Image 1 (cartoon, rainbow, N blue to C red):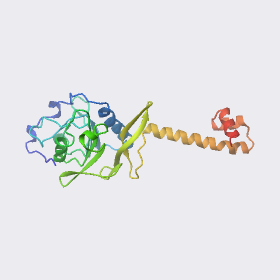
Image 2 (tube, one colour):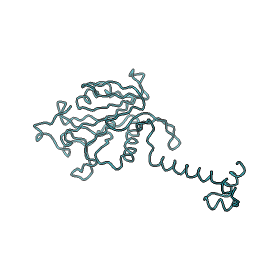
Image 3 (cartoon, rainbow, N blue to C red):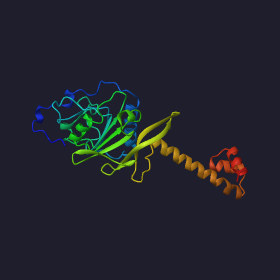
Image 4 (cartoon, helix red, strand yellow):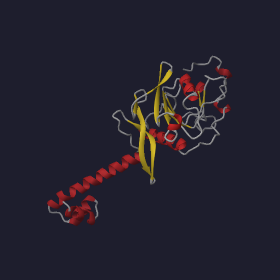
Length: 257
């Protein structure tokens, strides 16, 4: 794990360091999946201000030979840091600079393997171990046979080295979340994503999903009330008005009760 550098005054500030990686991503998953994880986290942890999730952001550290050379995961989560750290430009973090984050390492890093191999299983694994990253997630849905690994792997740092964990979704008690795959239909597209799970193994729903679920439950309750109100002698029109349903909906329920 990285220790505080006594020569910190000689280290560059975040404003002196490049703020992003100029290398284009090889596939849309490298942008889509980390952002989906971030957006969901913003909802389920909306009342917490001690975390940060970076997407395609450089992590500057002192474990290598040059602190100006970052490691850039597709996504990473840090806990115990400011939710939004103001830069001099007022734009939030330009990068994640260890010596400006009290040397707090990410608790989780995510790499999505692409056609161009990015050392996810060797060099980056060694770097993250040196940084003290507790959980390392590698998502490799397309090239896992080439790389002789599984499509979804989660490693935990134990005694200084990563050990592959078993189970999906994998529960991470230090984070209070599980992570795993999920088949999602969005905008008419059926795709596999990574998402967060709770301690029971249930998927955390987004705000939009919760609202849809709530609306469906409310509608189902109104439909179930149709027969009771008709049995009380109310007319179809009266039931429709009371339950905010169409006459056709009430007639359909009445005909099939």
